[in-house]
Length: 266
Image 1 (cartoon, rainbow, N blue to C red):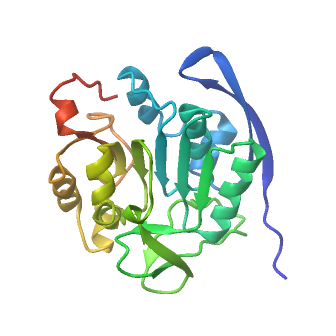
Image 2 (cartoon, rainbow, N blue to C red):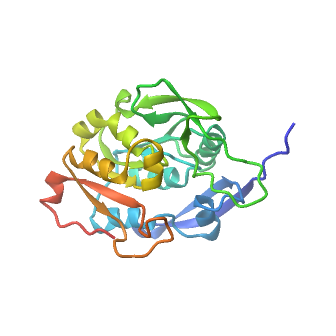
């Protein structure tokens, strides 16, 4: 039997941006050596705050709606999204890594969130029934990013793949897609959902990862624009420690809304 995972239980108070006088008391089960999303929770800062700034500054109300969280990781966003949609909304969180999926479910359970629906599924184009997902070293004593795990042609866990269009949603406010280069495949399998609901989309553009999956940043942008969207990069002009030197995250806004409203892009 392998050494047990090194996991810590962390509690924190987190302000709700919709109400300056309200604080959410949250609990997380975390891998202390995960140096990405987990670090933000432990250190008390919001991971990718511009996403929430966009919602707040543009007065986008998610109450009672559906939010789709593709690449849910440990549940950091799922917990926040749960409070955005409230008691009458739903969050659908998809995480292909088996162990991280268990962690996601744990964090949803610890915070008593019965409006979050988790699935251990890789969202893609739905052509292949199963794909292989890399397995990181969950027992590592060194810092590791458990979010930097990709669909692979080589060894790993076999996981079910489904198209987003195979699910039924009520009123999708936005879709968050962070799948380490698999974004174009997600869009291919979500075209009917996008056409029906016209949601905002928060999408990671990381060119070298997209190329690993047979596409590119330019192709992904073109594919989204062909669906009637305007793509804008967050933190434009702000230097980032990424391969491109830019923020990797973009927002896709339905063209019919973009032409009607003057959006603030943090």
